[in-house]
Length: 314
Image (cartoon, rainbow, N blue to C red; front, side, top):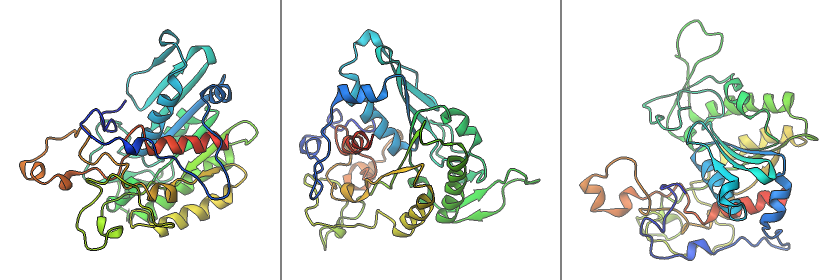
């Protein structure tokens, strides 16, 4: 369990966030069944590829699966760009590949990626593809890292260093295009299942669900109960771009649409109940909302629902 996501361990006193489940209108999701999921994974590699939100979904999946595997029949490789949970009796692995921008970038180190500028190779997925091309089930995501200012481009055939710069949406579209080209040319849907996870919403502004307030997700203990709620943490132009691109890959990519169902869950973020990797300043400690994490999700919690959807689609 990541210290970034283990909210109860880090002092969160309420546990209601662990027990909500998603109920769609007019249908029932297939109930999670760990034995059935392992049979779907027998002799296969399930790999999550993306950023820390996708890593949270991978941790959730490992937690959901590991309970029925004897301790001496399972193993976890050390934290690295590619981390692997292995279950011997099923000859199966559940893996996570750190690739927050999908294409090759200067942020590909899973530990040292807090950089002043983002540089990507917008036409190169080969570095990451060499790791994920042999997986049987792939779950991709990308979004959060494109919202952190302009991105510099380093083209494969460029004679000089990075100089061209694009805003996050434009750069993301280039990267997604390179990824889509890989999917089109390399994925046989009879042999490989590919999923793309839509953006995970943030809850940074409480005024969006409680007009007149000036907080964020800090202290929130109940979901939003307004049907169709939509906050600014889910960017519509980005979603439209992704939707247009994925519409060209319908035979090869299934969309795991988590955005709307997660929008309601303002109660599901770690807030201050997590390990922070950098020391908190006194002014932060005196004002808890100022350092609340309203981006990631507590576990158990919302990402478990995403995995129930994945199970349903498989």
